[in-house]
View (cartoon, rainbow, N blue to C red):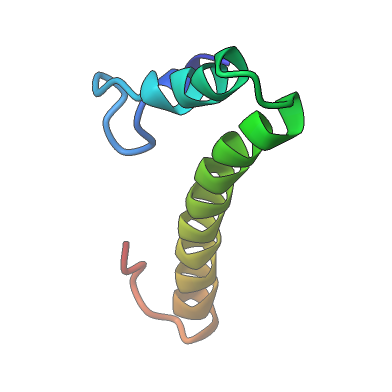
Length: 69
């Protein structure tokens, strides 16, 4: 839960706007599904970055190179 409020790269950097944007959409009268789209967008971005990192590690291991983070 707390990681939803912080940056993936810098835990001291706040990202409360992720959750607040979803709450703001609901306060304005939209349905929860519309509000959830904002959170899903952040999830997709973070997931893509994580998968790219994992793929880089796997490629480095497969070619016996040092990990290129």
